[in-house]
Structure formats: C-alpha cells, structure tokens
Image 1 (cartoon, rainbow, N blue to C red):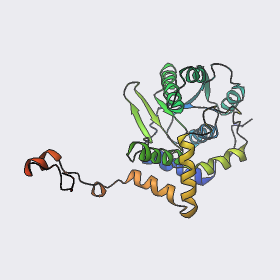
Image 2 (image 1 turned 30 degrees about the horizontal axis):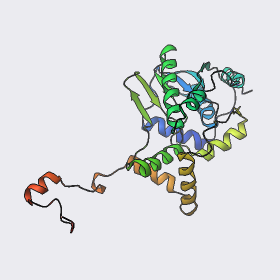
Image 3 (image 1 turned 90 degrees about the vertical axis):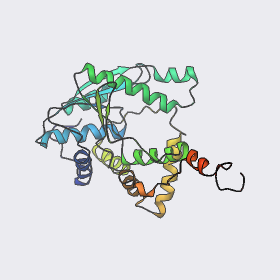
Image 4 (image 1 turned 180 degrees about the vertical axis):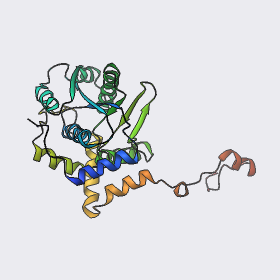
Length: 265
C-alpha cells in the first residue's frame, strides 16, 4: 500500500511532466481533475505523479479517479481503490460490457471503438462528479506511435493534442505525461510496486499500435533521438516545408485542353 509520505518521483520524470503542464497550460487554480485510471502502468503513474504535484504545488486543484470496467463488472478493482485511498484520491468504477459489444459486432477496429466508448463514459463521470478536467496517461511513445499510424494510414502527420477542450461535453482533456518516455514509467512503476491490474485486453496482442511500436524501436536502434525528433516536428511544423499545390481549376483555365504538364494528357 502506498503511503501519503511516499517520496517524490525522480527529477527526470517530474521535470518532463512539469514542462508539459507549463508548456500547454494544463492545470489552472481550482481545477477539479478526474484521472482515467485503467489500472495500467501509465494511468497508475499519472495518479501517483499528480498526487505528488498536488502536495507541493502552489496551484490548488482537486483530484479524483474513475475506472471504466470494460468487462461489465468482472474486473477486480479493489487494489485500485486501495491505491487511490492511500493517495487521498476519490475513486469510482463505471462498469460497461465493452468487450461483449465488440465481440457481438465483430468489430474490425476494436481499439478505436473501445476508446470512444470509454471516453464517453469518462466524460459523463467527470460531469457527474462536478469536475471540469479529464486527465489521461498517454505518454511520449503514444504520441509518436499515433503520428506514425496517421502518416501511414491517413496520409496526415498529426497526433492527439496534449490539451484539448471537448466542446460537446465541455470537458478539458489533458495528458500530463505526454513528454515522458514509456520506458521511464515502466522502470518507476516497477520500483514503486504500483498495483498494475493483471487483466489483459483480448484485442491488444497484434494491433496497428503494436506494429508502429516495433517500427519505431527498430528505427531507434540506429537513432536514439528519433522519438524526440518526431515530437519536435509535431510542435514545429513549418509552412515552408509543405508542398505548395496549385489550384487545378486555374491551371486548366490558363492551359485549355490540358489538366497538367505530364505526358499522359
């Protein structure tokens, strides 16, 4: 059981999280923040880190946590409740049979559907608890993998926003660990003995994200800075680097009978 006087995290993690909080102005005085606590290493680290920040920060904010039980009530969340109580974080569980829904629908994109359903449930929980901010445990690796997947599958270089106001729900979503590498979180969660839930998603063994992670690991073997370079690119996309595409209608007016200058017209 984690005690309230547990020492702070290493400076390297606190520095990266502090940089993200400041750079994207994630937390304001009086914010009521609900943590999406899945029971995985990233969300556990997020709860632990925000609890430590709350103790030492001059900015006052409220913390709570919510777990979406995707099995519809079969998950044992007692360890998460004990964990949250030790950090003085209010805790709730919302059960929903997401796994059964995916199986019945034979969903081709189970991760996307699951994420959307869980996000909706969490947004409702945020409002029901009187909170205004939803905090998720996405890491630097998640952002890099998302950018790579979008590049390969949609032809767009983009990732999720570190801070984003959801207009429909009027809930602000923040990702305080977005500049922290997954390997650092794994190391700290192991050292601290945080209570990771043993449940494993049946759809997580071979996904597009897993394949993207393997590609990045292969590239990082030759360039250890590749993840940070991708994050830098997400923040510093230069308009001058874009290909300037001419308006085909204007080109056609200037050169009647030809749509372009290739040899096929």
